[in-house]
Length: 374
Image (cartoon, rainbow, N blue to C red; front, side, top):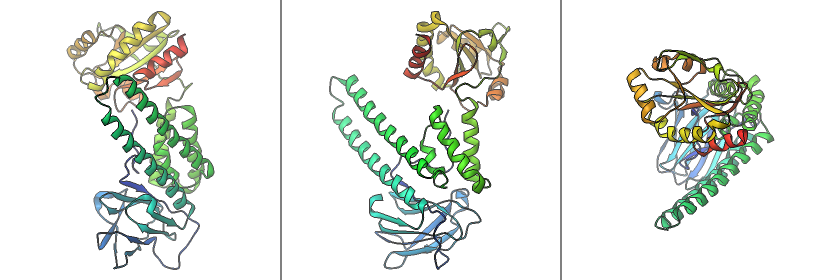
């Protein structure tokens, strides 16, 4: 299960990230100022994203020409939000002694100009891409709506999936390109949230950002949250070994995970009460039936509390593989050992008990099994 960071999700055009770095100092005390056309409010508010519920940390008054300035001096660099309109927010890394200047029109990202630091240039470049990406998705949605009555639905859906996948790959490639240019920018803590945490190459980029920012920003809560996320991601990186599990099956007999050594095993954390788990079960059943004679099996770990509900779900979903549970809900010994905080959660391990896949669902599970077993 992927957790969101505390900075933001980039996918909505209503959220715009612009950052400030550390090269340029101003002759005044403003950390953020500008002149914007199209502001509908006479006041702008600066929100610290670490303490959003506490309200604004500063207020800027907008004059008749659209000029404003924030003089708040944060103790360390952090991310702050300014709402410009119903369609646009600025998310800015700000620090005492640094300044970012924003000018232009609030009608779109492309109408804004940001100066002052490499961080600002970095984030502006990325946001222009995100605007383009979002516009293309809107066009795709309109095209899809017009084709919903087409009899060739399956081929149309596949075509749109490929187009969306290509757009996502372009975004991920740009993130890597920008990080490679300068991994030490604080703004990378925002960019990296849009890069999936799966795959050894992606994890290497997370590690690159961590190494570049650690010395200067180790005390930053934003860096600390990012670093904790990386630790969680790296825990079950490809090639890593998994902890032993030794819990009872429905008959009360202990079945250790290691007893399945020599097979490719899907360690599947689920529960009878988990709807997404139950929806995924038919896919796991199909994979099991297709590959069980080629050395594949499943080790189901239930987070149920009721044995009756657990056993009933096993029968209803035709889960004809090893099932274990200590019926301790989230306090399950296995869940604690694996750091499971959400289900479904699954790890695919090889014959030696080393991770070869994480949270493979739907066609991704079948693709990986075909790769390793055929």
